[in-house]
Amino acid sequence: MERFKAGNRLEAEERPPAESLPPFDYIVCTTKTLPDIPPSLSALIEPALTPGHTVIVLLQNGLNIERPFMQLSPHHIILSGVSMIVSHKAEPGQIIHESPDDLSIGPFSNPNLPRDIQMTAARNFVKSYSGAGNTECECSEDVARSRWQKLVFNAAYGPLCIIAGLDDGSIRLAGAVEGLVRPAVKEIVATAKALGH
Image 1 (cartoon, rainbow, N blue to C red):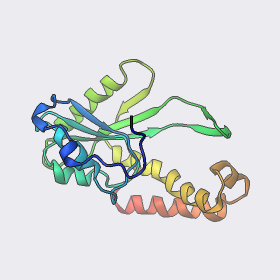
Image 2 (tube, one colour):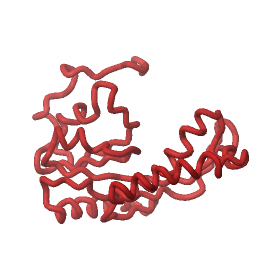
Image 3 (cartoon, one colour):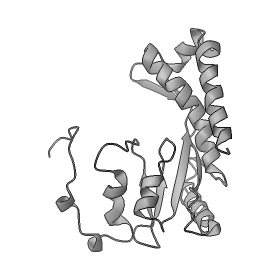
Image 4 (cartoon, rainbow, N blue to C red):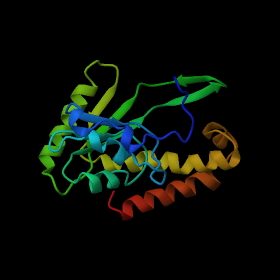
């Protein structure tokens, strides 16, 4: 078996023909969102999409991540999943999860489809995802708001942690919240409000 190396690609001729694939109810995408690196995720999943049937579920961070999928498949339901996991690194190689996975699911607003059909798909996915009882999963009427709420933390702390070479706890302990974090949070909140969230 060949080991995976960065840069390995699935070429178009290696993909199974679309007609040989079973109709998938859902295609759940949990990869890192890297829109500028080919091949695009939307192009990779295209052969597995069944028009009028397959629901695309994006369990990924970011804003506007649905756009390439809507361009590719304007008549597919696209659900957004926002996962909130409270965890921290206790020591190198040891991650402590302090709460269960809290997942909020809702449709990206697709103007090509009736809203009630999109909400029904979200409720059905929540029911399937929650079936084993190991997660907290809810259906959200306004999942875009949930995306912005998560972005407040990720966008404020992420760059600071990388630049400073510290984790978010160390940033707080260093006293950088008032001078660096809070101004970033205020800017993100102002942007979300300006966009109607």
